Image: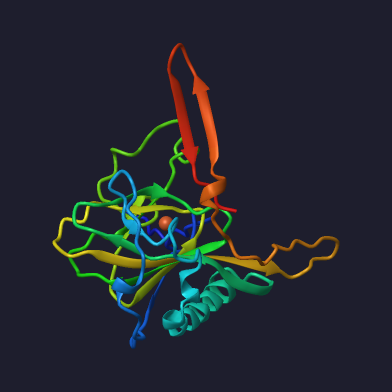
Length: 243
Ligand SMILES: [Fe+2]
């Protein structure tokens, strides 16, 4: 005797976040990368326009205005249609360029002081490493780890997803999601333009919350310096602070 099983497809609930890809079929002309001041970073991380002479919002550059307008259309779509957030205004609070030379990679991180983030791929080739999103394991399998017991990977239970870094494509995501990319094993630099977005939210019955819409700046002269003194040796830690 056979029994019939009537079941709907499983419904993923409370997703960790939403990653959305936007393709620009006519990517605007933008200035040559030679026009920007890239700074080297430690630990084989990409060169970046952060922390140097460039403004902390590189999209203020005149030559990037068309790109910024397209980003704003994409941000609006994400806030309205994916998040259904009730907001008064939004703005790109910071943006920069990254150049990943062969051999470099970006370690896993997320973006604080930001609601959603995006990465636009200006110059990439199909062989470049994808943008990897990683789910933090805390509290997801607290008693029995199933990590090594899946017969096949699937999008609901995987802890890593790679999104292709395609030229002319923007990947938007919740800023708290951990992301990074593996070693660039090609001979071509992988150039991207990441940005962060803040929004002022619509007032609710008894409370309101506003971010101060002020550009972020960096003061290298006012770096915080921590010193740990030991027997005959002094260890110093210097950290550049952004405000
Ligand atoms: Fe990032």
